[in-house]
Structures are given as structure tokens and as C-alpha cells.
Length: 83
Image 1: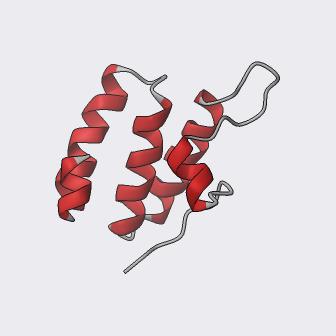
Image 2: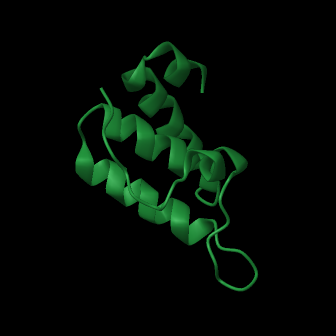
């Protein structure tokens, strides 16, 4: 996440790809990886990891469990590129 805060999205992507390879069920890593990919204009990667985030982040009734920061930001499951 430090790489993301520093704006080093390529390094963030590389690190997060290792993280999800080691633990594919880690929803937050898929979410962060989707953001890094979006910042790098890799829409396919961003969508794939957003979908994996949603699949691995389902609550007991099958509803999406949003992270506190996502609720505050009003995340609705879409990825948008920010400059």
C-alpha cells in the first residue's frame, strides 16, 4: 500500500500480484490490485481483480462486504481511472 500512496503503481502491482498468488482468497489485495491496474490503464486487469475481490469478499448471506474506506468513498463495485 505504500507504493500506492507514493504513486508508484507499477511497483504496487508487482507486489500485489505476488500477494494474490500466495493467498488468492485475500480480498483486499485483489481490490488494491484492481486500483493499481486501473491507474496503469490496464482495464482488463482492473476488472478481473475487481471481480475476484467481489467473489472473495462475500458475506454470510452472499452480499458484498465493503471495507470501511469503500463505504466512505461510496464504492459501488465499479472501477474508474483517476488522473
